[in-house]
Length: 73
Length: 151
Ligand SMILES: [Zn+2]
Image 1 (spheres, rainbow over the protein chains, first blue to last red):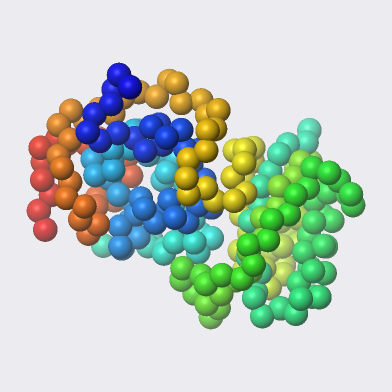
Image 2 (spheres, rainbow over the protein chains, first blue to last red):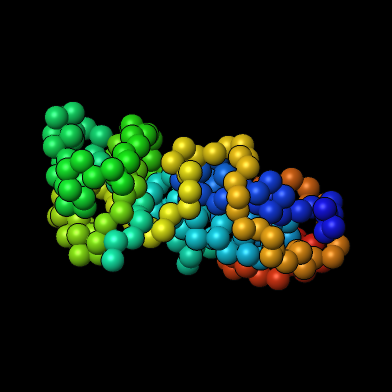
């Protein structure tokens, strides 16, 4: 739409509601070390990035995606 | 006042079917009365865990959705915690709609996305699909256009 750029927020663009149970989505937005991908890589807007962070934490707790504690690295 | 909740439970996958049903029934009974139509149960079955919990590599996932009173939720959580065959429990309040089946494709949700601010980045670098980005720990840092992260 108006703000469409080369990279846009996947969740805004497709009107996707972030679900912490969606393993496929959680995988897609974390790297191979289980860390959440930064916005500048994924294009996710600030609001959805916050929700994504919550979803990823829940997904880790539920062993849907690998767990890396915050103090790792 | 009753509110809507969603609970994910992970049971020990080595439980006998009958024992599993019994435990699940008891936990459900703590949350709602028998026949309460607000309760929906979604069984994911047994899946491999992304990391071992205890020494278990697998778990049996159940998702409950229901309306209940906070007091009953407290009792439920106490019971679930006492049960060593319940490996995980997570309850969230006011779950979003229609998320029981993980959606891989976008459905037309009437999501309130209208007020989304545009992304603040101006120069989107191509970000070669490298998934091995040394991602900073912050989940919400302001993007820095033009700054390439070096390996
Ligand atoms: Zn967004």
